[in-house]
Structure formats: structure tokens, C-alpha cells
Length: 497
Image (cartoon, rainbow, N blue to C red):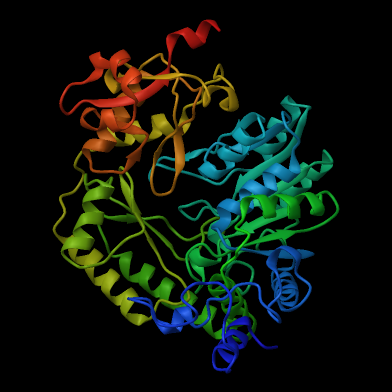
């Protein structure tokens, strides 16, 4: 089957002159390579239309569906974000009730806001040795559904950012007993279901809608993703409608060619690629088992291959310090750092060098770390934020539109947040608009910032003037102290409206 990339290259080599968009006219322009501009086209004859596909794009999406075990698949050109927005918007009418993992990506919260949904949360248990959330269980989903009869859809994440995999098959059975839909954010699992030793993907496990970020774990460009539909519960026409709303009307053929290229690679070379991946990754873990101070999340049925979680708790070193050491001394750029751990990602595209350099660096770092230093406060902070649940929170869709004021972080305890506060990556909210700050949370957020972690939604006093107009500045004049950390909270008068 001819790939989209092959067809684009063939067109670029022809003598057809482009009297159409894009403006670069398939030529090298400034610093843009002709390899990119040459295959960057618009919806011209022979290349179909993503939002009304009948030709090559339809065939390529059908191939993706066959490969993943879905009834129908759609190319996404603005990442899993567009897929999550579309899936939730199509699954629930305005004001309906969704059961959602509290550790969901912020795009799921954005969908809940746009549809004014009532939200109930699923809370995963915490793996305390590593300060991460485990995957949600079928028992937790069943319990939550028994407590809320009006839930119309369930939204979970599997694998999690750190690679924890849920038993989606059991969860799907529980959800379907209620006659409602299961949506799985499987953004980090586009590689699942293709080889022995890897978990099933959620299409194979019976989920109704599954979203994959092809670019996260497969060889495709950033923003490329897939949305899959299975069964009869999902309203496919509504999903198409919302995909047209949330995606560009001028989808990138470069990105779509990248999706198709990854699908083609999986179809034709998956056995050799995954066999090599599996072998190299386990060989690295075996060598790293010699570490006495650094700890690594062990492989199990519930842990995805490729997500190397590196914990410094036993050695008393923060995740940020490990991250910085690996970058500055060994020139190894990790995916993210958190309070007590950091995360390195491996995929089918990593060669021997990737494993050798990481193994040697971590063994060397482990050799000079002290044993059993104390970072208990950091761990306690992380656990506090991961387990927090404000049962009296205001509805997200209401709170996010309320008037806000800036207050010092140290004085925010007891007030309702007016903005999302999250560590990025991965973009999972620590606080959602409408949830109340606790003193422990304020201390935890301040500690994360002092560690150099990227905490979004907290502002330095010096940047305040850029956030507000003159009226806002006058009202919040008392906040300004050099170096002070500020957060948005709901104005007091909102509480009485």
C-alpha cells in the first residue's frame, strides 16, 4: 500500500506548479528545509480532506484501525489534546456527570469546563516508595459508580505518565454493566499491543474511545495522534463534529504523513523493532540493579516498558538534582523531574548508545551518593498533593469564570483557587479552579518552586503588572513584594453571589 509520504514525495517531484496554499510554494524558504516544504500541501486533488475523507486519508485511517484493533480511527493533528476534547464533548451533553481520574491531563479538565460537566474523581493509590500514583483499579471504578447513579461516562488514563498500566479489560466490563462509555487517555501507550511482553492496548481491551499520542512513543512528529472508536455506545457523528471543531480546518499533511509512516513501520517491522527494544531495556535494568542508593520502579505486569522512573529518596537527593546531573555532566536530557524522582523515556527508536550512556551515568552517580539522607519533607509534600480531594469544591465551569484576585501563596490557605496549578510536564493539575488551598499544599508548592520545578499557575510579584489591567492593579496593590509568590484566588464577593 502506498504511504502518504511516498505520495507526497511523488507529487513534489512532478512538474505540477502550485497556485494554491501554503505560501512557501513547496520551495526552500529562509531556514525551512525543502524536505519539509516540499511535502507541505493543502487539500488539493488526489490528497483527500481529513474532515470528509473519502480517498487516501480514509484508507490510511482504516489501516490504522485494523492495526490497533479498532472499529474506526481518526488522524489527529493537534495531539491527544484535540482527541480528548472531542471524545468527552461527544460523550456527554452539557451539564452531565463524568467520572474522571484526578490525575488526568488538563485537556480533560478543559473539556469538562467547556461542557459545564459535573465531575467526580477517581483517586489512585500512591506508591509511596516512589511518590507516584498507581493505575486506577476496576474496584475503585465500581465503587465510584455505585455511589453516583447519574454518571454518563468514565475517563481514565493508562499508561500513566510514569508508565503504570490499568487493567482496562476489567474496568471496561464494570463500566459497560452500567451501559455507559469508557474513554481511555492512552496517549503514552501508542506502542502497546504489538508484541509479546507488552500489555494490550485499550482498543483490544474493550474501551469505547481510545486516544493515542503517536509522537510520544513512536517515530512521529510532535502533535500527531490517533483517536479510535469501538462498539455502539459512542456517537460517531458527534465525534466527527467535535473533531472538526477542535482541529484545524487546514490539517498538516506533514504531520499526517508522519502518523502514516509510524503505522506503516508498525505493520511491517514491529517484530524486530519490539524484540530489540525489549531486550535492550531489560539488559539496562539488570545492570542498574547493582545500584545501592538510586532506585528504579521495577518491571511488572502493571509497569510499561520504556518508562525509567529514577528515585533518589533512599539517597536523599531530589529528582531535580538527578535530572540536572544527567543533563549538565553527562549531556542526557530526561523527560521530566519531580520532587523525589525523575523520568527517562525509551522507545523503539533508541539504539545501543542510549542504553549504554544512561547505564554508565546512573551507575557512576550511584557510586558517590550518600546513603539514607533525609528528604522526608519533600516526600510528604508530594503525597499531600497527590492525595488531596476537596469534597466541597465549587464546580470547575463556574469557578474558572469568576472574578479573581492575586494573593500571596503563604496566605492562600482556605481560599478557593481561581486558576489551574500544575507541574509541567506532565500538565496534571495539583489544584483545579474551585478547589481550596490547604496550608500543607501552599508549603508543598513553595518547596517545588524552590527545587526549580516548573510550577504553572503561580506568579512572581514582579510579573504581576503583565497579568492585570490598571483597575486590577489598584485593587491588588497590597500584593506586591519583591520575590513574593502570588496565586489567583476567587474574590471574596464571589462567595456571596
